[in-house]
Image (cartoon, rainbow, N blue to C red; front, side, top):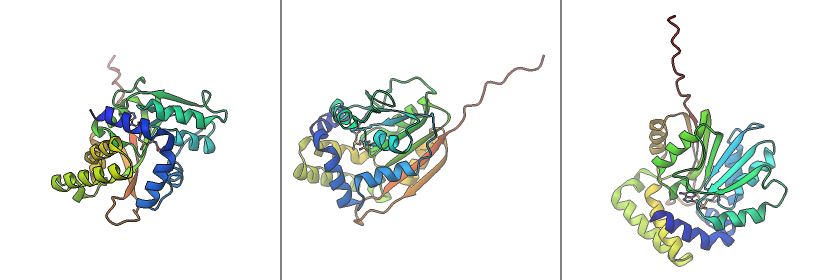
Length: 248
Ligand SMILES: C[S@@+](CC[C@H](N)C(=O)[O-])C[C@H]1O[C@@H](n2cnc3c(N)ncnc32)[C@H](O)[C@@H]1O
C-alpha cells in the first residue's frame, strides 16, 4: 500500500529529514530547503486572524515559518507519519505550539475536518506522495467559499508523463534512493513518480475540481534533466447560494 510505504519511509527519515531534504534540494534544484519554503510563503497572501491548514506538514517547517511572519493566525498541520510530527513538536518549543500551531495525525485523503473550515490550505513538497484527484477534492471540501490553496512541489515535464519514460524514471528513482538512502525511501519515491504532474495537468485537475484564478509559477532546476519545481495558487469557487423563492 502506498500509505504504508510512505509512513515507513518517513518514520525512518524523521530525525534526519530537514538536513536530508536540504541536501537533496540543493543538489537537484539549487534551492535551500528553507529558501524554497520561504519563497512559497512569501508568494502566499496570509491575513491576520485566518485559520490555515498545512497538509503533510512533516516536521512542521511551514507552520514555523508562517508564525515568523503571521503570528496572528492559527495553523493546523496534518501528517500521516506520527514520527515526523513528534520531531516537529520538539522543534517548535517557542511558545506557539498548542496556542497558534496544532499538529494532527491523519490521512489527507480523508481529513478529520468539517467542510468549509479553512481560509487557506498549504502543501509543500508532498502532493507527489498522494492521489492528487482525491487530495484536491478533500481540499475543496474543507476550504471556505473563496478560500485559497497554495502549493509548492516538484512538477513533471510532458516527457515524464509518457508511460515508458515514467517507468524508466521510477527505476532510476528507486535505484538512486536505494543507494543514497534505503529500501523504504526507494519504494516511496519510486511510487511517487506517478503522482508528479505538469503545470498543464495541474491546471486541469484544479479547474475540474472547482478552483479558479489558478496561477502557476515555474521555477528552474539546477540540473536540466531534473523536473522543475512549481508553485501553484488557486481559489475555491464560491458555491452558488440557494435561490430564495421571492415570488410571493
Ligand atoms: C517530503 S515530506 C514534506 C513535509 C513538509 N511539508 C515539508 O515541506 O517539509 C512529505 C510528507 O508527506 C506526508 N504524507 C504523505 N502522504 C500523506 C497522506 N496521505 N496524508 C498526510 N500526510 C502524508 C509524509 O508523512 C511526509 O511527512
